Amino acid sequence: MILLQEMKKQCKKSETILLGVHLSIQGGLYKAIDRAYELKCSVLQLFTHNPRQWAVSPVKEDDPVLFQQKRGALLVAGHTSYLINLASGNKEVQEKSISLFSKELERAELFSLPYVILHPGSTGESKEREALQLFTHNLDMAIGKSRNRKTIVLLETTAGQKGSIGYRFEHLRDITGYSSFQEKLGVCFDTCHVFAAGYDIRNEESYNRTMDIFHRIIGIDRLCFFHLNDALNPLGSNKDRHTHIGKGKIGNEAFRLIMNDRRFEGTGKCIETPKGDGTALDRKNLARLRKMVEG
Image: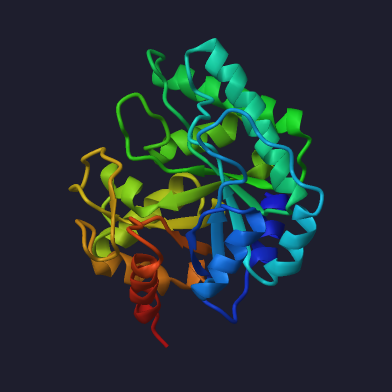
């Protein structure tokens, strides 16, 4: 846990609200930083390459330098490609996923990203425990292959879609327990996914109960990042459908509780709400969250 806690300390900026949005890298990764500052963000989430392609283009020599020059105090987290599925029962997909994830970890180190967020994936026909062990084996293979020693891998909570793993807190605990890289693993808590998986957070009582369960099973120290998304579908729907803050089935209170939870003052929070055209909807969602901060 030493590496994990050191990274959390480095990311903590008590003088500002750690809040931001996932933004496009069109034109280069450093362009996303410009977009983040235009929205007055202190957190940025991005893909390190085209997330819909297995091929990864080489990094231009001056891109990491430009990125660091522009970055300032911005907390930047990477999000892995949609194609990566380390729990797949298909051997070819497994091999391609290991290769791609290792390359993404190498890019994360090149751009000094503290976190890379990874979906645990889908099992296909595998039994759950076998799938968790397979995922962890392939995760360890990718981390070892990358030789990345600084970036923390954040396992994202999932909604429980058919065949997926990661929708129970026990899954994330078991992955961490099986891994040879426990000190490099944390959790990204997605509000929509957790709610869709059946964990209620809509009021103070249910929020505290869910956080107590999380702490008992995983440990609150492993919670390093939030995805703040309202849910289009009801509690326990197992549907991954995001909507705007306070406009879905979760409602405002859960987000107010998270924004004012002293335990998470130094924890990055990022919206992944529907975009529409331009940045108008991002601005509205960010403004709603900022207004919830008390004192």
